[in-house]
Length: 173
Image 1 (tube, rainbow, N blue to C red):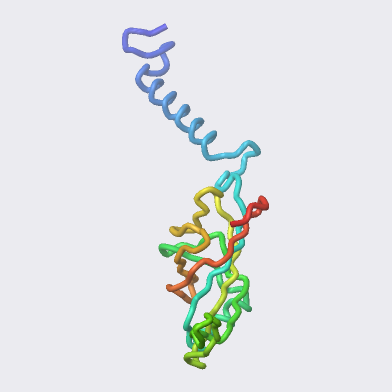
Image 2 (cartoon, rainbow, N blue to C red):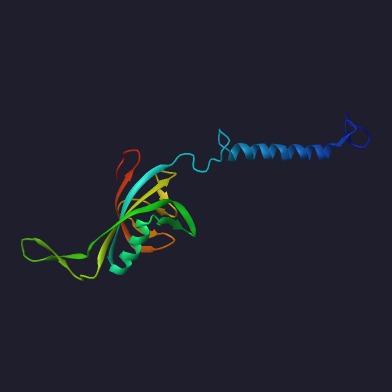
């Protein structure tokens, strides 16, 4: 089968044949790994839809008006580390910023506006996460009470706190 020059069947060198076999096997392994069962690329085979709200306090009205125009236009896709994410700011609402003040010894509270020019913004964000346990979108975990940066390619609100979260599977946190 192998002649005096080291060729298999007198046609191909045995070393060349081994190299060709290694290349074919590597291509087959990579093809199976990166292609799904129906021949499409399986980037996010299973995702969980998450809707959460982020409260950002003490924002100037001009900032709110500019942010609102991007959200209303549907131009508020989340980003992190210079890459767009699978998430979108779908709504933003504003309320006057208030502060609690005690007015009697009985512990009654009165809401007093400390600066009529400042607003508290509530962002509603929808995203798809690969791991519903860590619930990471970009570099941030989504959990009630965590600080959260609302960042798109158009605006960034760095002092938010997650106040509500709902997962697709019906589990709420």
